[in-house]
Length: 392
Image (cartoon, rainbow, N blue to C red; front, side, top):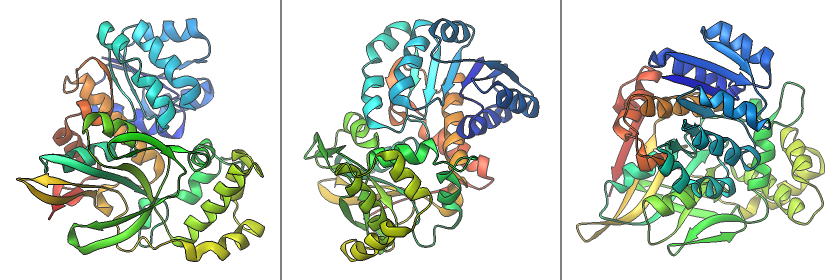
């Protein structure tokens, strides 16, 4: 099978290329990027091919994908390029996997389900860490329940004791010292309103709402909501009757700092790019204002860094379920935590484990047992050292 890594010279794409090559299941891998020098350098290192591409050149994009069996797409922002690339994949009957972490383009991508199904194309969207691994953890938790009520997926920003789980400082800035695209996107998802599920229905509300959790193992704490695809995708796949949110596990002081930025964006005092710069280089008046509101926010307590928490029923009794990655089970650094799941998801299409045509979130088509076994193997640990599912 021939794999094209679109945007493969970037951090996430390059990690996925290295992992895909190491799996030894692809006959040919092409690193396609507008940064041809970066793509060529990666290709030489990994032993694959490179090809320049501008995804805004529709004819060139179609020609590239027409020669491929599968494309992994890490070209962002997804609200600009996600639907364009997926339509090209459908037109050329090329299977597709991406790491879209924006709920709005996620809905646009899901709207292409009928076209993808008719073309026999399997498209898996949001196959990174969150979304991606988070969806699969939620599905594992749902396996323990007869009915699902509430779901909270959560990921770490800077929780106490997270250690190597986060590389936030490194991820905030590009090599030129400017805020990364990821942090600009983060500011967008912390402003305005975001999609959540309340009472079984999708609704929209401001982010940074508290999510107070009581989990198996005696863990309690508070996380804070952020815009992400999990609410709109898990609403479709697991059909919970209650609430679905995506949340951040972070210190009170960090939540307060983000709240100052959110408030300033929403009041048109700054734009998301200015907010991103202030997050990447914190201090000054923003820091002083945030210190004055830290008391409004609650502690993460004993919450694990990366998890899905569910409530529901089993055998007529109310249950709480926690599915979490252990600290050893989370790949270090944002690029690896996102790129490795992307490669493992693509591998499931290549090996015939995920073949259902249409556009799907990960939990709808990914073989969860095979995925977590592959993740544990990548980390060099046993499955029990990687993943824990507990309930009461």
